[in-house]
Length: 249
Image (cartoon, rainbow, N blue to C red; front, side, top):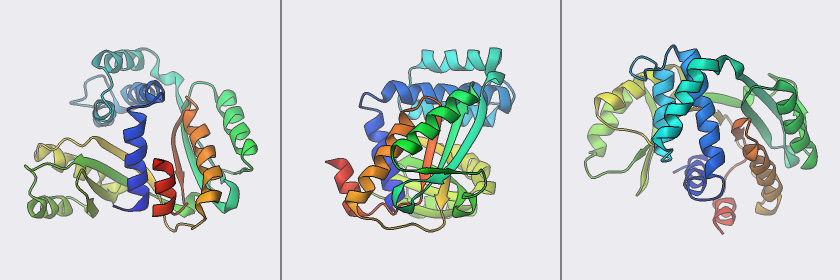
């Protein structure tokens, strides 16, 4: 499994267990709420965006009541949320792309700027770093004895998968932005339910820094991710085995 995918898996496992669990639920609830408004209705069978948001919520064991409340909220006032993105550099030249869902633009701008300033980062203008990342669909699927990898790979590649990585616990499938819907539909046809299905900004190239330098970058990422308005933080730091090992300590 590549460094970035392994890092995402570690974060997801830790997030479901530690004190950040409520924050994860809060962010997923926002995604569900805005999916109702933008995707066209409260029925996941007819709203693909909502179906994926609910699927991701279930993947981290978000209670059914929380999911239903988020859907109801979206039906009532989902228009209050707006999508906001930020681009900038952390220390040591690491590029960051921050995605937010917010009902207060000034609050979000202020808190994101404060985080960058605290950890010696610099915010850039929108679009200044987008060329460093490519938007991809990523699906994380629990490894199972019922899945024949040979058959699975043939089917999912035919649906548009570009890359398939597997370890003892997880199969990670990556596809282009355009094929995200095709791959998701194929998984549904195969009765395979991912624990996570989302669009991520994958770096075109990564930058190698030392584990000690990475600590400051990871602190900035943690602070941003702790912000209730922040949904995702993407970066181009090479997640070496040494950095990942330091995270697991």
